[in-house]
Length: 66
Image 1 (cartoon, helix red, strand yellow):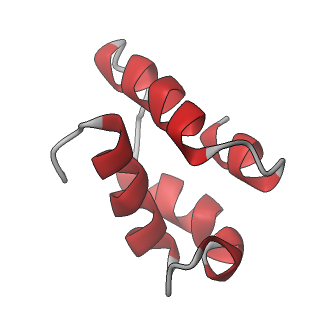
Image 2 (spheres, helix red, strand yellow; image 1 turned 135 degrees about the vertical axis):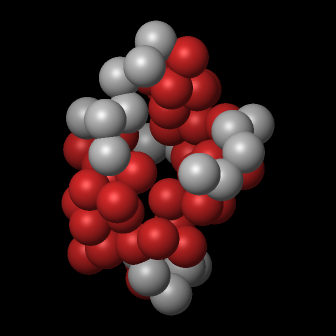
């Protein structure tokens, strides 16, 4: 899971690569749910909220915001 990689302090560029692959494969079922999973990890990743962290990861992954 993407949030597990973020929680494990993986480099966000690597998380972006995984997110990009998952997105291309249609494995991101709910961007809203992803943001909820990222919420408790947002501040330590210099983002104010889960949705902002999700959007940042989308940018890193080269995915347009949904």
